[in-house]
Length: 228
Image (cartoon, rainbow, N blue to C red; front, side, top):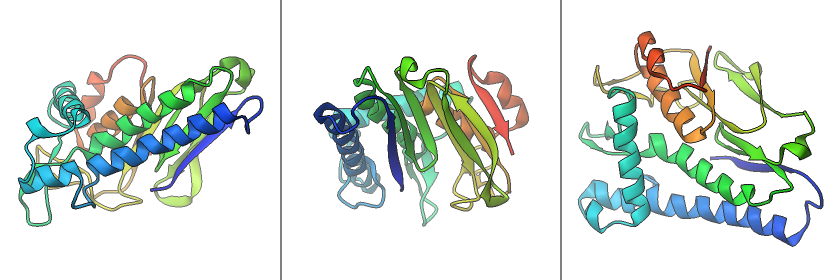
């Protein structure tokens, strides 16, 4: 997926800045190595095939497994990490959580640059933060794509710190699974969530897209929903 890092602050060519950016990208490559379902040698693919037991996996895998259980509890079972594969067999697939988690962890490498502000965008999951003094009252402007016309921006969110995540079918088709109906959701529109954590914004964007409208009542304080 396309991943970009934007920084605002002094001396963007400084060695410590280049090192922080390189470290963020290195982290994302490590996440891909462990969690990609498109790589037969990833730990998640080996778990899904029965070759590797979760107990023997990398501790980062344990962390994601725990987060997936927590996300399922928080959303009343609407978010799930057990999805049917191409053969219809239900297997562990944490990719609905991993991207937001990976972005949030990558952003910590950028947050170490205390005199810079950052914006990390990974396939539409956006994490921003860093020095508010650098922003000087001009926060990041995050555009939310119109799901019915992907060449236009339907909404702009201004944010100095936190995350934005969007779920829908405009880009990837019917890939979001509703565990209640045991079916993939195939309808137009999108749901974006803005809040303190891009990890949980991503989880809730998925849950609110596939779940019933009343699920919004479970949304934690500090999060905003944008439905298009």
